Length: 325
Image (cartoon, rainbow, N blue to C red; front, side, top):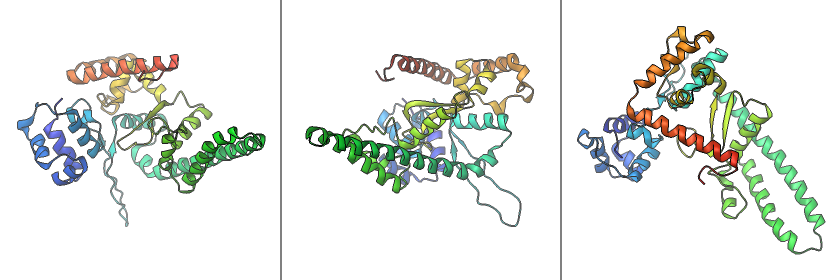
């Protein structure tokens, strides 16, 4: 595969990193970074490890560097008039999150500026709610453990097995007290065979999944099981999408167009306003199909590959097998 030199250079500058900074973060030499940023290197093959390390250092997906994925949007700097000028904010928005903002605005009439300013309140409520949820679960586990220890009195082999669970409960209690949101302090329990796999689960992701199920929001929120983001701005969060029912209405259920929207190849905010009404479904789909046909071949191939992956993943869920099996 090859790296787009301009993208690499632009992303590095937008992250305010010198070549030396990027070399330190990625463990790729300054000389090689300079060569990769040169237009003379355009189209030359680059090792997967190099692409992955640079992507990790820049907090983007590898496909962003190769041109297979669009460059994530940045928040428009926020400002307001008044005696006290607030600090400007700049952050990367992943394509699927950009789509979510557009859908939220259409559903609730709340714009991006409002959502950004309200984010601390929403996040703290969810984070603290997850700690309450974990403490309640832990209390139930500790009560069950006490009962099991009492029942196993005089039976030596049974308490030996319970000691691992007791150790896990102790680690979880310390994690909650330390406000360890993603349970990173408990990762060692996975190594001890207690069933905690941070690549698939963490306590905050588990809480979000259960909250979604409890509130019966499945028509508006889809949270993928066994899938945790391992990089980027949503590292530690489960893979999710919001207002999924609205996307289906906009595309008349076309999975191809849904995927193109999710990955940022198509943009709802670029759509003519007259096509956003409920009675313009056919014209809207026609417009989206036309825009899709104008996409580069790489983008179309990417959408096709992801559709095949999603189909395989969903099939694995119905058969009870993992997506990697």
